Image (cartoon, rainbow, N blue to C red; front, side, top):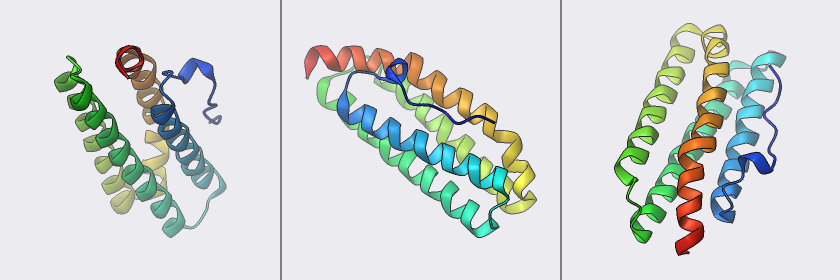
Length: 133
């Protein structure tokens, strides 16, 4: 699988959110490489844990901004975040129980979710924040 490439198409035009997204893309690519390269299981697990932790932190960051600026789409956006956290936790559990291949099979759907979320829901949030910040 190819690396995710950060470019202006993924920018929501809010620097602090874009910085978070760049970090998530970097960690996603690191996880993908670790799986492709056959890196040690404990390393793959560490990268996956870091990706999940950073994702949760980032979601809380976005949610704080939404609350602070009175974003109308807060509940729907938060629900999407919760769905991804649940998916990521399922991926972690599958990896711990079934190994590397179970996680490898889920990488592409995770990529589509990540980019899809940024290109739709986060773009709407970025547009709103760009007007009120």
